[in-house]
Image 1: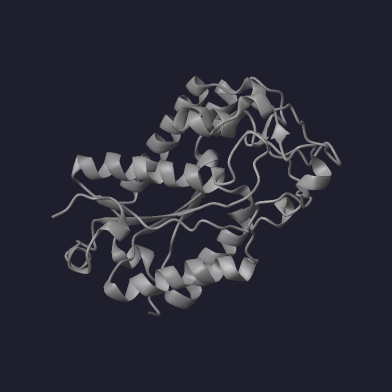
Image 2: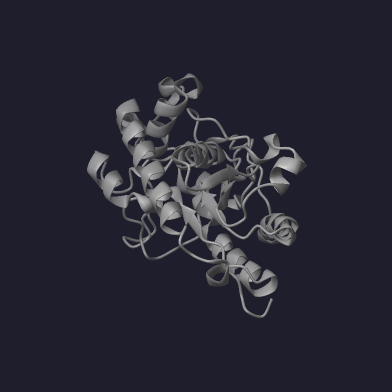
Length: 269
């Protein structure tokens, strides 16, 4: 049996032979949106896909479970970035439909162990609503997670910027890029662009987000499409962040391996 981790690289006969009880399918989500003048517009989806693939490789090589990575859902909900050229934003209902129909296509063939691995903050609210819709209408419970939320302690440890320095195209995302693909980073164009907070409770930071969620407009709320301090980014920080995310998410998937089909499906279906 092939040990490939990419769903699209398998034939239909190889997929038919997969053990449904031990096969997990990760669906990476993210965005195609501006990330300042120094990072590429595929930053969010690239990060979630890279983490998903590292998790799949790590677990699949262990031999207990098989983890496959579905084709990533490149576009997310990014209306707050449309003031900059290059951003492609989906409506909430479009994003939901793509995820819903992906699961609806695979569930009839016996697959039920799915994980949505998200790389874009603007998708979080939509994902919560979408997995609820999937549970209600398809009868299957799917966890959704954003990689940075699994490693808040690590971000606090490695972060040197003040709160507000890890928001967007920032110390964290630039560090990840310097580790994963430094050839795509132009640090000569990186600038400090700390958030213009309407209130002390609306801070945008991966380590300590404010509890007052005021919708953003990056053209209004930043100078260059950055929220934070990318000048403090390093390759070493990126490696620590990436490794921690892979370890935490991998442990979560292995921790779900004991769940039975009845634990993840609704009795009404």
